[in-house]
Image (tube, rainbow, N blue to C red):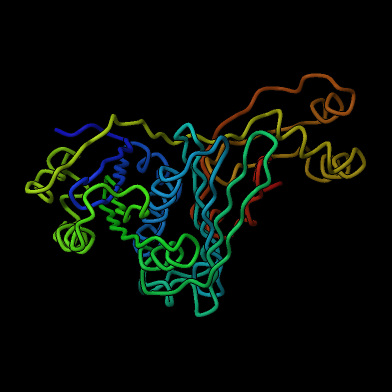
Length: 315
């Protein structure tokens, strides 16, 4: 039986190829437990969870990587965030159920993919914006790698009822190659294409790599854990309301009897009554968070998520 919720790096030395495996189990189940995603939306969201985690595993950074897809089709927003610590969260928003998970149908012809890397310390953020080319997210990201890094890259993404998994292989830069086999990269690609979705979702890394590359020289490195984790908090919600200003918050409380903010990513509810609102603007602690579940309809039509602060629906 394979381990759950991991990312793992490997080298196919004889092909001058590096690779990464990601297998999400409890992480994927928890990410989708609160929203009733249609099958076509669920498919592309699962691929995005894996793809973002694979992207994060290929770079060294101290912060978070965000993969977004925005379009004018049935799915108008998809966003997944991954931290350097392996914390993952994400969501999709749709106006109607797409008939297919193929990107032009799901997101529309004018969709764009945005990849952002934000460091925790003093470093300029990176952002890349590219057209969403190809029928699958794997194809779109292969195009992104080709144009941004000029390194041949192949991705294989799979989503099942209980798992989302994937593998990325990449040709080593010339200065890092040791075997200099002219056919090595092509051989690695052909062998990797024999992978099935069932194998990606269910087999251990050792079994997968042995099955694909049993005639090659392969090194498998220690696995790192991945987990669903939302960074929302009462403190950040306090900051959001403080930013609105006392008058606006007082008006909402007077009209509705209180303020409720629902996190877009994990559906945690942050509730403020009259006493909480008054305490907030006097710098006093407010009451504890209550957690609930939003309906699928309200989730699908919720506002666009924001970055570091709580992203939520305000009532």
